[in-house]
Amino acid sequence: MNLYIDDQEVASGDMRAQSGKFTLSGDGLCIGYDSGDAVSQLYSTPGEFEGGTIQKVAVSVSGDSYESLEAAAKRMLKRQ
Image (cartoon, rainbow, N blue to C red; front, side, top):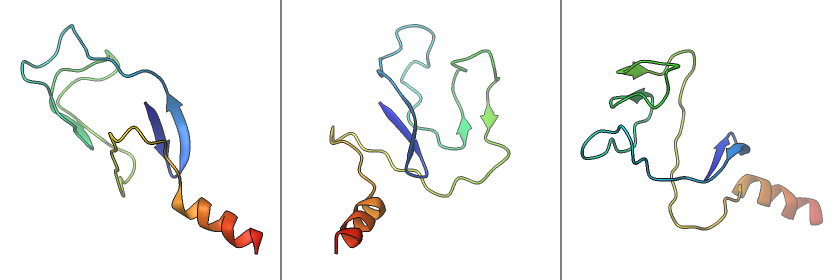
């Protein structure tokens, strides 16, 4: 899994299923809040995102690597 913020990779690692404490049917994907069980003792649930603005979220399960189309266009323009 790779986590990008503004086209910059900020974290990466393996993504595994959680076999321990978790909601019975799964929590799904929550953006800006956490409705299920906390996965860390650093916060409590329900929790809401504070201190910023979430402008866009994109999720891909295609297996293809991420490529910034903006960066690709800039590279093409530099070649001319």
